Image (cartoon, rainbow, N blue to C red; front, top):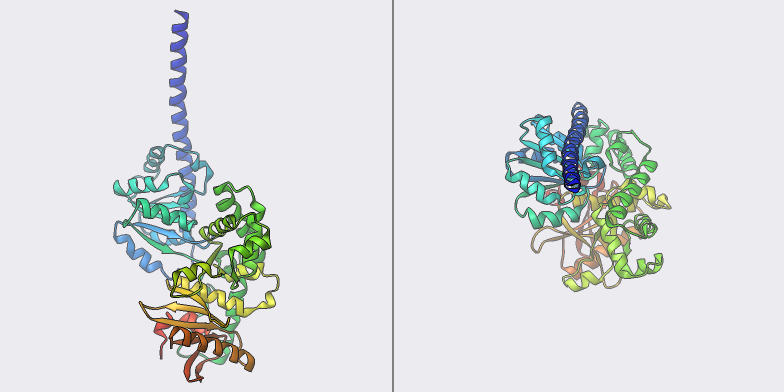
Length: 451
């Protein structure tokens, strides 16, 4: 009898504990959401630099597709989403908050959201990749009638889950650090392409120098932080938070060494075997995985060598670029290197921003063209980047590489993006268009610039 009574007491205790635990959990979730709402409301009162894709993003809210905003950490995804949803009734959850990640009952989160926000048809889920099984929950939210906007800082994790669980039910927007156009907006500098003085152009070129050196991360551009210290800390944070901790890596120092090497050699070629030998990795497979992690976390992106043969593309060395020239300048051991290197990296970012498919090319004799850009099924453009063409040796090297690639690939559309030189020239029977980088950055895609 005593044992039976004791058992009943124990059952009542467990029931009471579970009920109070649920009450406590509910109160905790509610308090977290209230504090995040206060943060959201403060952010909505501030003025921000309008991003170039904002209009199309706001127009996309008319359809019921899940909106996915991806890009590097601190590039402005959250602010972009807030700008996108401003004037709409929306609820907000930030999954960079570890308190929220400890909650396993997603219905409890939804209940608290309803209690705090009421009937909010739009739902902004920030840094969604931190939430376990997020894609299933997002899919369920959409089926319940929510118009969902999500942001994320892990490209392949997001794309893999989106392809698996949300096929055809989402629309994505890539957001990178400020473009040069956005940088000038932040500097309150209005430039008329059709009519400008040499003095104004000089100011513009000074801004371009500055942009190449500090990059386009919003907090850097707006002068809120020291560029070098901020960018180093940002990269370190991404390595630890988005890679080491996510994948439980045992050799964090190796990852850091690899990132430092690749960022220090931005615009350069690499092979996995070479990286293994230089950095003393145990296997090529590990190097491949670590490079993939750096790509996923938007630390670097890689460009393949152009070849009509897929097998040759995969076997050839790749070129590496950073998503921000300020990061390159921060990690380069000798910045004097090179504005040309920073210019090349900037062109790669801009091609990425414009959604272009592009490669690099190496001719049979070893001469290299920076970019082979695909414009259609069988239409290509060759783009070489050069800071200064005044030196005859430099001109000959750049022109010869273009001509060699043109003849091997059968491509006649030849460009050199320079610092400020402009004009057409004929070299060995082929026409080359020399165009200033600043003008290319401020105008539309290359296809729109054809004379």
